[in-house]
Length: 185
Image 1 (cartoon, helix red, strand yellow):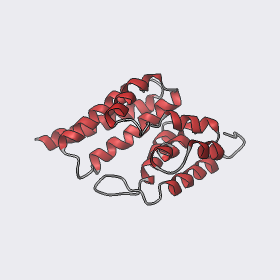
Image 2 (image 1 turned 45 degrees about the vertical axis):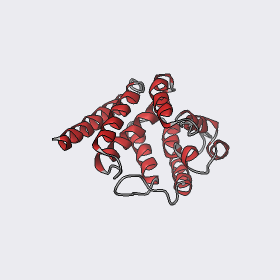
Image 3 (image 1 turned 90 degrees about the vertical axis):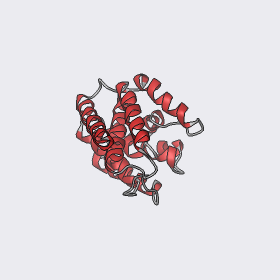
Image 4 (image 1 turned 90 degrees about the horizontal axis):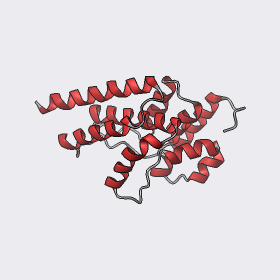
């Protein structure tokens, strides 16, 4: 990233890139909110926790290569190799089966860079909020409970870099588990 550029301008440029890339996509939840809201929330979580600028930019862009027509080369051209590499580090290989991707997220989390660990935690915080507040209609209680537990296993490998994110994840995780436990009664 060119460090001579205004940080706010870079964040807004990445937000616009993400909004255009995710145009027309909606989240799986009952609220069917625009997908771009998720990446904006991830970036906001990172910014509020004092994460580095590259992590905030990657938070906005983290699902573009995985879920849109955008390529790694597009990200390099627009935001530089550092941000593009961070997005790549946080991206699943969609060619692999879902269960393999999920297992890899757990096993690879401790090996990720500090910025990627923060990005992964912020992504899981956003996803846990969505599971608690507006779960996909097709996800029964067992599937939501399994997801929350899996997110906790991924997060365990990402902790220790940013105490504010660690604390926010724990708070979000406990709230999601409490909500699921209340639903089970």
